[in-house]
Amino acid sequence: MGSHLLGAINVPIGEHLTAGPLNIDTMYTTTIAVIVVIGLGLWARSKMTSGEPGKVQLVWESVAGFIGDQAEGALGPNAREVVPWGITIFMLVLVADWIEILPGIFHGKDYLPSPSADVNFCYALGITVWLVTNFAGIRARAKRTGSWGKGYVQWLKMFFEPLHFVEHITRWLTLALRLFGNIFAGSIMIALLLAFPVYFFPATIGFTVVWKLFDMFIGVVQAFIFALLTILYWQFNVETH
Image (cartoon, rainbow, N blue to C red):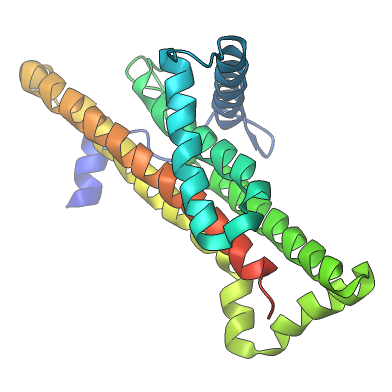
């Protein structure tokens, strides 16, 4: 029955503006998210003051304080290296999630899907975090042994335990699918609400506004979770095995 309903109201799920194997709309919205994060960072730096902070500086300081506390709790004095990564991941995921609030460009006139609702974006972000945290682990072991070769060999030893190997090698996938599932579900709900007949228009608009506000909250939660897991994976990799 669900498939008949979706077909009847013609909800565009999983459709992308493509050029060969590339999803152009996802690349476009990801670029917007990156520009917004960099722009907010540069703006905050230009307005930085030791006196009463402005709104942008206050936002960055709040995010930096939260990420710093989480990193320090996990890594102690070695937390400084992961804090910039955690802040960047949080802001990028948050802006990517919230792009959906803006008017649509490629997916019709009603909404602009978040790049987080495309599993390819989530895969790329998950793989990036996996590579960065593993490199941090190799570097930490190299510092302890005094040799990059020995550090790499020590890092490889963790893969000789079957359960640990499976858990470690799939971290990027669980990161990606957790983010994708939550954001994609929100995109479907908004598409369904906007697809109701016109005589339900007032109620549909009301439900859509409420759902978008809830979706913004979910976006914040998912950004925090992604940043927190980045810190935890960093911790797991830099600790002595």
